Amino acid sequence: MSALNRLRAAARSDMKRWGNPDLAWRACFSTDGTDGPTGVAPVCRDEGHDPDDGSVYVCCPGPVIEVESAPLAEYLAALLNTDCPKEA
Image 1 (tube, one colour):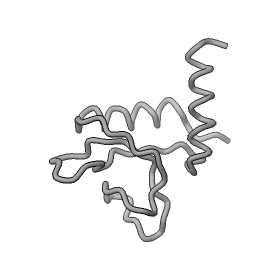
Image 2: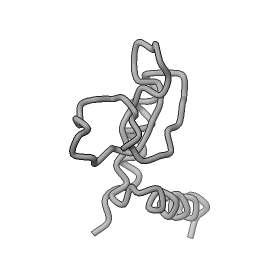
Image 3: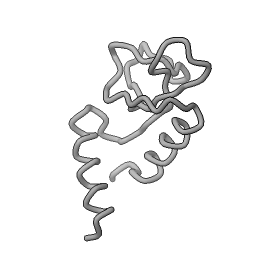
Image 4: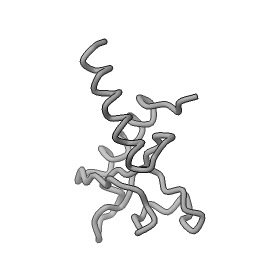
């Protein structure tokens, strides 16, 4: 197993413990006052949280990772979602 595959498996295990079993990520507003979503977080599955709302609430699973860049946040969310597809 390659080093990347070992890291991927370890990250998947952690993400499951954080309450994100399908490993879906989104760009989010992790700080107040930013023009765009500058963080990444697992998708919130709470029925009261509109999927199009990029805010982070108490209902949202962690971790929330601030990256200080809207383009980087969008890229990381897309990369995580591509790299960690749903398991059957």
